[in-house]
Amino acid sequence: MKQYPLLQQWVLELIRRASTDLPEDVVAALARARESEPDRSAAHSVLTAILRNIEIAREKSTPLCQDTGTNIFLIDHPTGVSTRAIAADIRAAVEVATQESYLRPNSVNSLTGTNTGTNIGQGHPYLHFCEWDRDDLRIRVMLKGGGCENMGAQYSLPSQKLGAGRDLRGVEIVALHAINQAQGKGCGPGIIGVCVGGDRAASYMAAKEQHFRKLDDTNPVPELAALEDRLYDKANRLGIGPMGFGGKTTTLAVKATAINRLPASFFVSVSYMCWECRRRDLWIRNGEMTIE
Amino acid sequence: MNKIQLPISADKIETLHVGDLVSIDGVMVTARDAAHKYLFENYVHGTLPAEEKPYADKLYPLLKDGFIYHCGPIVRQDDQGHWHFVAAGPTTSIREEPYQGEIIEHFGVRGVIGKGGMGEKTLEACRHSKAVYLHAVGGAASLLASHVKEVIDVFKHDVFGLPEGFWVIRVEDFPAVVTIDCHGESLHRAVQDNSDAQFARLVDEIPDD
Image 1 (spheres, rainbow over the protein chains, first blue to last red):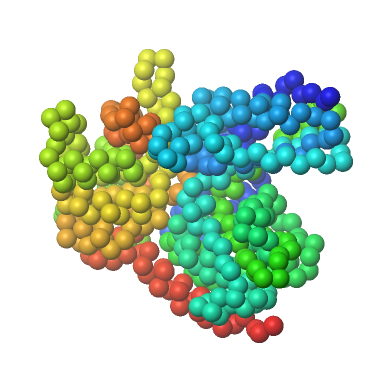
Image 2 (cartoon, each protein chain N blue to C red):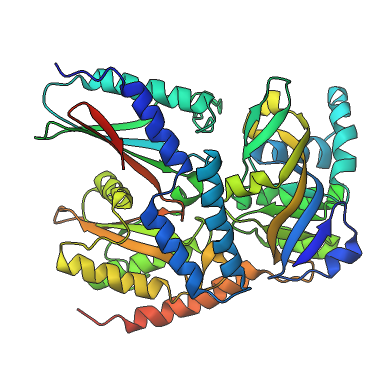
């Protein structure tokens, strides 16, 4: 059986990086956004503060945001490992990361209202394992804050109210509707994940997984690539702007996927990620650890 | 950039308008969900239990002509027992909408800092009681913590949990934008009205399949 004796400390470093060091593709998109907003506008000042915050968090190794969110781990592992051992190491690393203030105690018992103080509890952290045919172990983490999570939305098409049928036109209408409903409340400029199809649960998860994609990638499915471009263009014409203060930059990127559905269902799920798209990948290849 | 020194007078609040960028100096206090419920149920309404009297003696002078900050910080305690703010951005304000207006009026609060905006009751309280709502940059927690120069006091954190306590902090050059003023204007409402109209136009642009 393959073992990873240093895994707990590597995952701790993964969490530290995710919480304090924003990925370059997101920083680049924010820097471009600032250039597009007029000097002295509220939008420009917000983006200046955001970019300064990114520098400070990286220099001081302090959390980008005090809401360190739901801790979502997606693990791809080779054949012949103990997923229970990996899960135990991840949980231990989450606990240490909380003690070291890289994570805020953020796990609350839904019945009693008591904060567990450790980020460990029923359903926390979220772990999903998938066996793949590589020899490498990959652990991806996303820290998704509550403010933006509250702005997600799911639609069942057709929607007579929105004039949205069961086609890509309908998808475009409801996704744009979700972005407009969110205004600045999800800490925009947001990154929008869209999933067409699936059941309710799979659809939401697939929409959320879009936030792992690099902002400057290209969707290999032409219809989805075109949908992403159209939504990006329209969202940025809503005028909502950074933090909802008005401006040109309402979204940094739109990423869409499609999964199969039942003939009877046509769900469209929209996951709103704040500007602070905190995600990192831990790779273990031939016993060597890298964080990307 | 408007400089604001806390405590602040009603006259100075009247000079502020939506869209103004401000920079705040002075002492303010954090409060989020548990703290607002506590203020609402024990001070604004009901009778204050005797054991809460020491907190009343702290809260009334802090809140009169003062600012509330909607924030659940990440904090660190050093070896001498002093607290420090590590990460301290704003939290979503609308959750306090049921309480905020009456708290502003009861305590004479002059400003509330948070994110995402607030509703009609708070807007009306700001107009009536001469107060403003200010929006800080959501997610800019390390930057905003660097403007917190001193943690002066903390209470109720033992009961409410660390992020929910009343943290009394001294800030310098704390940046925010006025998004609800005391003249009945709301930037949130203006942006929403504009984007709703734009949404309708954009939908019309989408060709039929």
